[in-house]
Picture 1 (cartoon, rainbow, N blue to C red):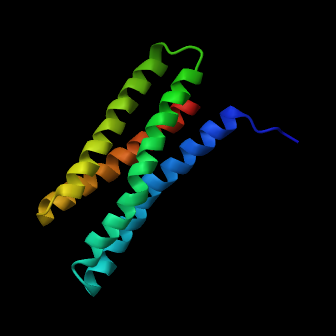
Picture 2 (tube, one colour; picture 1 turned 90 degrees about the vertical axis):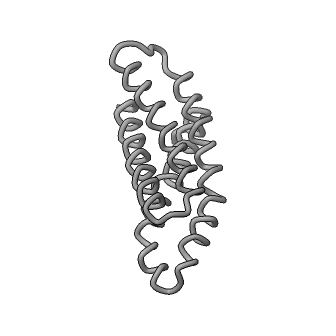
Length: 132
């Protein structure tokens, strides 16, 4: 039997946090039209409830992401370039999520929500690329 170690813990926490941050956004986006039909206020309440788990997950992603980088022996060339792009995309994902959370106009909610979703998915794909 394989023995779990700190690498197992690090990767498990990172994947779990990504599941919450990215998967939660996709799930919430799919539910918003149905929630809106019941009451225009319900999507906002659902978003607030999601934020209570999403922001801690984002924090775990950042911490375990740094831990992931520290665990890599050689950060050079294409890996480094991809890593820098991922860091920028993760930062943009957080900024657009914050903007979405504080937006009030429907156009801004849609724009920042879409940007947050796209950047979260791109960060996920870049993470898979770095792990490969």
